Image 1 (cartoon, chains in turn red, orange):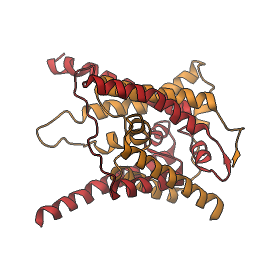
Image 2: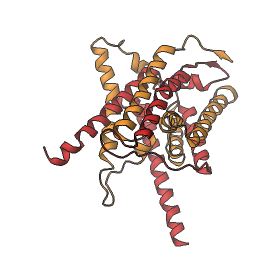
Image 3: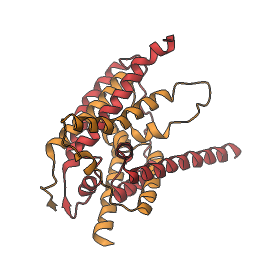
Image 4: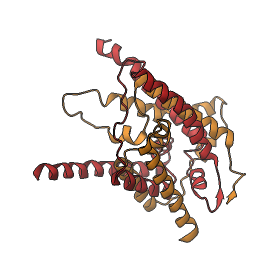
Length: 153
Length: 155
């Protein structure tokens, strides 16, 4: 085994295990069931409050972990903390999140559950993921255009 | 408001939520990173640019784990740990193809402009007590409620 591999192996294993745990959590919680997600978003119909418990359970654990991480200042496997530094409440944040919410309400799928559903062999989830990746690439393209315009002026 | 008690799954949803929280906790404590699917996926490049390498491997490892989850679940069904077919029965997508393409584009574009989705803003951001994530979460939840209202009760 090379020196580099021995250095990064614990990190790779940790990332894989965390991804696996997150995916299993999505399945168990019901997030990968679009009918359940839409049942939660349908306040005016037969409302299924389950997803409020998903968020509640996740945040209850998360609050403790992030408080601890901030106090430590570095990660246990040695890499520095990569926490967001942007604090702007701007149009991009709000319009982007609104667009995401519309798509979420149309399909009942958000990025994580869509990936899990696709891996479980749901053909329609594959279509959704391809469209989502196209949307992400479109963002990259539009960002590059904007950067170029800023540079030219 | 009328609560759908028949489909309400308090215990599995709470347990699943705790697992999501544990995953986010392990990720920030062990790897120092935010567990946000749209950011991990959107930042993935097929070829690494520049001299600062090492930004791809962690994303790939995480995503492989995520994609392996339903396969492990199905194996668990085979070992009698979960009721066979329960997972795939509960993944039925009702939206038609055209709707899924539009929805996927909106989710891809929107999560990149908004810099996060249900995991990055909803779970990690709210856990960090970030005002930006609170605004984002209110925006996408509000838009989700409004969209379902329009599609189910108006159109």
